[in-house]
Image (cartoon, rainbow, N blue to C red; front, top):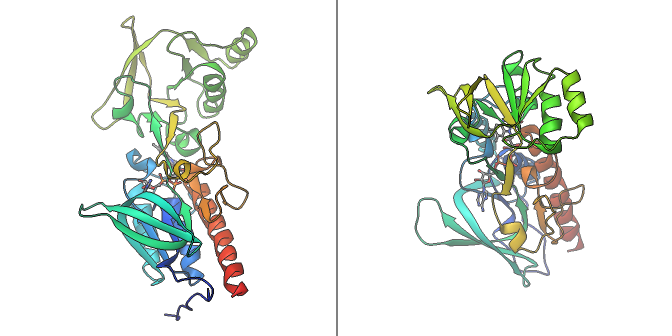
Length: 322
Ligand SMILES: Cc1cc2nc3c(=O)[nH]c(=O)nc-3n(C[C@H](O)[C@H](O)[C@H](O)COP(=O)(O)OP(=O)(O)OC[C@H]3O[C@@H](n4cnc5c(N)ncnc54)[C@H](O)[C@@H]3O)c2cc1C
């Protein structure tokens, strides 16, 4: 194993790590690989499952199409074991406190196994904390999430192509998504669960595509024990047989750390970064679903790598100043 050069920061007290990555999903593990290979002392702190935990397979991930989400991350961690520069802690990061003496940060962590809080110091932080999905409060949505209720046709359209599909949503969101999904099946129905909020022009377009709109209130979704959708039941009691339903969920940041650290948060709730993953707070970077980019595992991984390069270059500039 190559020797890791200690940082040269002659003018500042040392820190435990060069970078702490908060979140061990695709973005975090990919960033750890890049930084570990830069001979940086890296800690990956993660707590909780990745966003796609409910899904049977990660699709559209080059060389890993269909791999179970937990397996994808296991492989990522296994690969990182070759780099003694990278360590892991199963802990929830609860605070990031700027440290004027080191010009870095102190992180507070709550270990998953319990016990007292831990702290560590670092020069830079990368937030790869992801988002979580708030689903409509309809019986069956959560139970079928990831199998019969799908969030993205790019990830799961292939598996349900040609089947009886529905899109749940109204206004421009539902209107746009149902047209996208019609790429995978000619039998798609838009369920708006109340007034559709679509203009006459928009309705005409859907009619031309053979897409019907159901505006009745949705009572529940019914599916199999294995999570396959069987039917959508309207308040009138009438069931609509469907094999899968797509929707754009409401999203929440998985962590409030960016907000608490004073990073700029966009109206959408995403953490703003420049093209290289730097947030508005110097020394704090962000990557993956937590930022505004399209949300796919491979894009999260690419963003993690991009932010890691920017972070390493910032560290290198500091190191070379002596
Ligand atoms: C049902 C479903 C299926 C999907 N299927 C696909 C697919 O087939 N293909 C595809 O490309 N994409 C898919 N996606 C999207 C994909 O899950 C995300 O794009 C990807 O997981 C983003 O990676 P990430 O690293 O940004 O976040 P995540 O994978 O969510 O990882 C973030 C991690 O950070 C942890 N964390 C958060 N806060 C803290 C904290 N304070 N301290 C410590 N740890 C913390 C979280 O618990 C989590 O483990 C799917 C999404 C869903 C919801």
